[in-house]
Image (cartoon, rainbow, N blue to C red):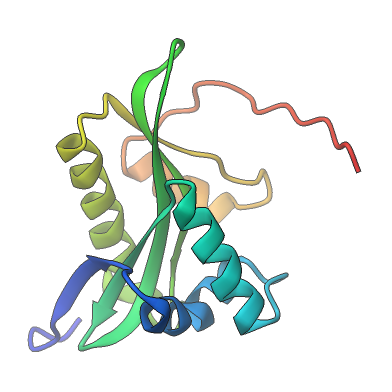
Length: 147
């Protein structure tokens, strides 16, 4: 990455931030085909504790991380990262490392004992990244479809 490029990570605060994140988030959540439906869903999720971190590279959004802080009897206080994506066009810039490290720092600042990510079994490249970031497989997620 060019030394002159400026990286900033902030939490989305308004509809303009959410709208600007859509093209990047759509790379991960390909079923989100309507920008207005995306904005409305992010707003609903924000009302339920969801945070959307935006990584800007020279002012342009190049990565997103959606997260919540939870507390349970089994885990204590922890951060659950629901969405983590960087622009495919900028994948060799180290942006995923920067966003992941920011999220881990944010989890520490919020008093979390751990950070968790659930990743689909088909995402081998993502798993290599998570293992490189010292994440370990702790359990299986079991799902019962109801619809």
